[in-house]
Length: 388
Image (tube, rainbow, N blue to C red):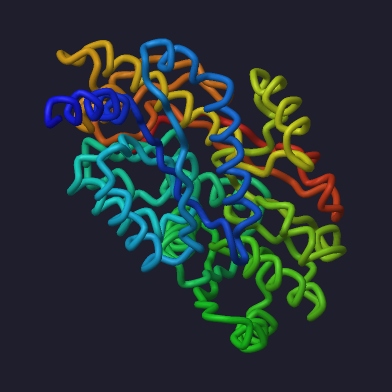
């Protein structure tokens, strides 16, 4: 009887060994969920379309979503749950650098590969953790691109605001640093904790009369501040970062987007329409989900594609052919993807985990209709290597 029970259990154990999970952690609820949900959808679409090679090797691959709510504490708690699940071999995410940085400490301690489609803070990769990589550029370059844009437009007086997040505060500081180097006076550096600070900051803006407002942060706070600034009478250029890049911005700011001397934002992604190889992705996304893909959905597709390829390569090199590869092998295989061709570019990583070359755009807002957000046009585009 004992022999019979063991014999019946053996196939189940073997089946469990062949199950692989890829976690994805983004804000799936709350103010920033419009971006987080589409990051999840982009990864989900890639899994459906690209999983066959690894499944042909006898593995079942599933995606397990986690909602970090754009909250660092929740992101860390989710990361602990992820790290404790031995079937999870890679994590895609996060959307917010302020969540990714502490959560990735958990991934690093667990030897778990974390590939980001959206995080831009220098601290994400400056720790040089072998498990932590990203496929987008860095704020220290994005902030420089914003400062160059201001200088090229003849701006001599700017005012910087940030939303107190690690991302917003960091990129606003980098903009200020490089703007000063380029002869642009930064007349203020204000912290917007919540909407109650708006009037105080705008009073200071009225007194100092800048030609450009720079906002470091995400769409909800930035769009609300822009709307209030236009209502208050500010008519100069409004420049923000890739946290601004969401159709939610148009929902909040409305006609304020088209008032004054223009609204621009820098981004490491841009609309999916800017990438020639993303045409099929856009079609398939529209067929499966409502509306056009939000920014970073295409990058999430590429992250999932890279995770699947790394799993395939690691599984092929695994000594025990009927078992899942180790987390260490998957992390190593992701970093070894040299010249991987995705829909948003070709990717190789340096020893920090940054792409060896990344795209940066300055985008001009051309419509206040949320449904036409992807029609915003690039005012400038360039490829830049990461800082050494």
